[in-house]
Length: 450
Image (cartoon, rainbow, N blue to C red; front, side):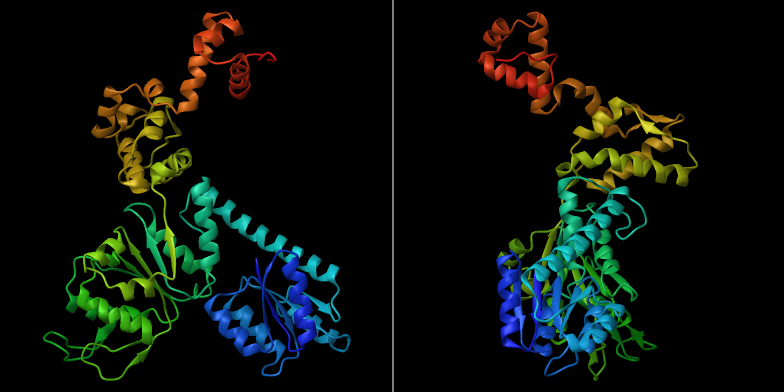
């Protein structure tokens, strides 16, 4: 949790910074409002201890600015005894609480702890809504794996920061969902979210679509057209497959990112932009840079924050949740009454590589549901590529995790030796103490003491 202390009194500012730093927080101090607000735009603070009397700007105005542009930031007002009424008014306008000067060490640390609890609770609520797959703050996301919990937390943080984001992920992992979640969780959520795929278009067409054009700019331009950048005013633009953008167009995009202005094709008057750009790619941009197919300066403009989405095979524990979610969707779409998948079918899905990621899993469930006539899905309902794997392998035995293989083998030896630990340990070529630990780990019968 990073904290800003904004106070024009040097002694108070240094004292609060020292106490909070010793309590384990990252602290940055400011003597005036404007330097603080400038830094806030680059990297918003989680918590702000704000003095209401500042030399260059009113404390109430600073509070209003923070709560308008950085809704997730919590503000604790710091004031003298003579201004308690103002502090109370500040809490009505969104401040978390207030402290009176001189601030005691106990009060400062306690307030920081309470804010941390509130922030953690809010993030946990976001994760729970995401894991449940409801229509909450992260619509469409399903997962409770460590990999996805980390993604949810990153989305929650970066949504509040007005910076460019680069999404690196394979096809079918949810790049568009991620971009939309960043938009919906941030201060631009009431403004447009615009999607554009950069792949397979000429520079002229990309220019026309992104920048728009004036009437008569080229043959066929019979009227003025507003481009996607301009139409997304105040909102977010997702540039998918950014690695496919022609090099000549990359120069123009770099200019947009630097100047925050565009020119319509055939236009002469620059148009100011207030948009957030999220770029997505399933290619290795660094490799494209080495091949002179992508501009390095554009890469670093886009790559302020990178989010790398995990492949489905990297979060297999989410597959049962995803299967349940897709069954619910397909029941509505196909007017079916499927309730679950059989154990062999789920076992097959748990060990499949999913080169098409989550999108492929949804396709598999749709295929199976279309062919199924019952309330349960079986391996024979799956596409040919999965049925062939079923015929080739016995997934129940041959594709188990290492721990499960070890558990099954130890259990078999123990059964054959009548749970004679001495004999079993010789066959397994492990000490009796090690065997006892394995039996305890895998909960095999009433494990004896070593």
